[in-house]
Length: 494
Length: 86
Image (cartoon, rainbow over all chains, first blue to last red):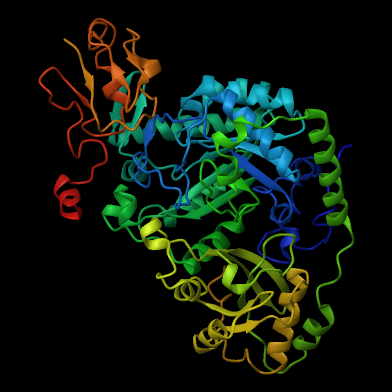
């Protein structure tokens, strides 16, 4: 049974992702693209609450060096791109996909993202895709690449029914590129400096053009590196949109000295959540922006923000037996039920109370509110269990999703992961700038600590749909005069 | 005349398909180069292919145990900085 695309973004008026509610994120996309991404958790903010994905780590080799990457690193506690626990051969990867599809029927997407570059390992990458297409033809296939080898593989990618490709494009300028990439391997030589950046940039742009000409959906990832490419990324957004990329994902640099990367060791600062959001908002005038990226590991499994990879290690899946037809039928049933649920008409988001706010003499400023959710687009997670928060901007205009904050962003391995590390302090740091946090339940200690930090804890909206809950809390806080002194988070937004 | 892969290798597979002499193979604890087959790419390429794509400094050495990619040559991290971190 085929799933049906949800009706998203039917509201007229504003096409930019920076206004209206989050379900408008895809509103200006053509219908045929919305149909292709409606159940893709990485491409649709709405879908990521419901549908799962997995990465299979079959591509170890890389053909470039990025200053935010360290090829030596492999830690089960670490969550960021380029990191895996177990490298798979294509046949192992296919078996793992089937095992995960059996256990997590809401999985719609399998991607290859490393730990190196998938297109620097073309035999392994394409063998994996062929096998998945044979056993699970309904699962969407994606690949994420640095773009260096993209032009030579663009034709094959389009033939393999891989209709989603992500290219990491950090710059269009070879001078900036030379600061990000120390070398590329090209035509049997290691090329350095500006010459290396020139080759990489040319290949990325040509690859982007070739894919969009062939009808392949292209998302562009950019790593925001303050002082290096941050002021340039608006231009990147404009250019990649003009060449047909449908989504731009500006991600924060992850750089900790413990990671052993160039930027980590050299203490290059990462952007703050506020700086990231300001840049995403600035780019949003030109381009559909992605806000819910979790910068997954190259072997992540499950809903975005969760990782069930440890349940599917090789020793566990080797022993499993599968009934492919049964798995496929169950997957179709579960996914169409989710699609139906998503298609239900949405309750208008507290428009009455928001409208009444507008009549007040003093305008209520927009504020950020965080939500603890374990999926389903509902406020349904205990504060103490949250490893990340969804952040929404509530204003008189409505509620919009602006990003995620991870509490374990600075986790650097098991020595630092125990309870001794003050999880509560990490959570409060992650919530910097938020005026409230909505969760299913919360203990008295964190409640008091949050209040002391000027963040209002709220569990009154447990199990409610997120956007309605945020709107209701915003209205209530405004009514109670709790927001009159709020810093205007929207002030910096262009 | 042969190159050698040493303990710094992280088993990333990048070198293996590039070797014009099929001298490189996966092994435990790390990849190895068959000294009888390795030509250091003489006659095939200007640069030794394994050492030209290897991302790890000091993982590939020549017949005198000298690294083809010495410390600081691939990541631009000054070796003294790394040393200071322990």
